[in-house]
Length: 279
Length: 246
Image (tube, rainbow over all chains, first blue to last red; front, side, top):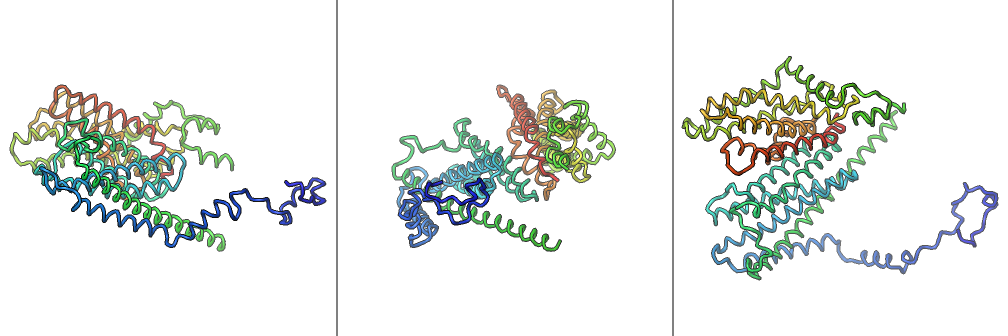
């Protein structure tokens, strides 16, 4: 309380109930909240952005995808032994990385939901699981195409292939459990437990090539002479483009889930109000 | 009023909660509670025989279907026998474990179980004993049938040991998932769809221990470890699976 503020007579005798009647001057804002402070400047600058940020990100993503496609099909050299079939590798590795990242997000979201009952964690886990299943499906398909060309078979019961297939089934089961259990909170809780348990398979998939003798090639990133520099750049571009693209997909799905939760909340509250009126 | 609200919130959270509310715990201790629930399930099963007959007939039909699919070459049938046995055990087990909690939910007795001053892990242990016993009964018919129909040396001690260990582990997983799937649409489908991929380590270790006895590979201890993980996980997670189930 500032010294200059006048005290009303009831305040002098100790009555505090009448405070806040609007006649007391507002407290001075801190320096970063003033009209010329950094917060105001930041918000004003953000409002002056000519287009919505989503459009900007979408444009960047589209550009990145085009650049990555150019690098994969035109910019990078063909492999010495495999020839053009090697170009599947870039997409395959990028999708596998995305699947790992998506399932890690499922894990994080599930832990957040179980630990703090945070509904956003459940939405994140759900959206990421859908993305991860999509990516794993495409990983299995691109891998089969490459295997047909290089190994001569579409599929073999190699350790990495098998663990990846199990991964796909685990998260398909996760999504099925989500849709099968009717009560939303119970579905979220069961799904969170399954999502945490299923994540155990992700490190097994990654380490399977070093644990067992497999047909699947060992990781080539990190070994100095495994990839030509142009190939490494192409791989990095593909991973970046795929990450941007899926990140945008994920954010759209999250926005959708959030909007639906808000709508359901509104419908529920309207029904409650109606009940209140009728009784 | 307050007492009722407290009862509603803390019901089924174990003996400690009931002590806090001033409700005397049921006599018998954790093991006694589990055995009482297992005994009740066994008595009900003895009266109807619905689950054991259903699972047993399905298991024998799987043997038949696999024999048709493989043809009549005796050598091929003998080599495939352990694998066929595993397919039959797993699918009939998933079918047998599904109703462990769902039957109670249908008849309204699950609420009674959850309200009773009994640890939920004891409820799970009782249901697990019931399900594993059921699967064991089915296997008692399945193992000789497979040995005869496929002319394979399956009636050996190592096969029985691997089957017993894997049965307990798989029954724990399927019972937990059956509890989670109470009130779900398509529960009969959901339990095997979730249980099979989650049971992968147990299935691989168990099937290897049953089939070609690979010297130098400790498949049976591996199966034992996997089964221990499923039983422990079930005891820990059953509280989450049964929350607000009705």
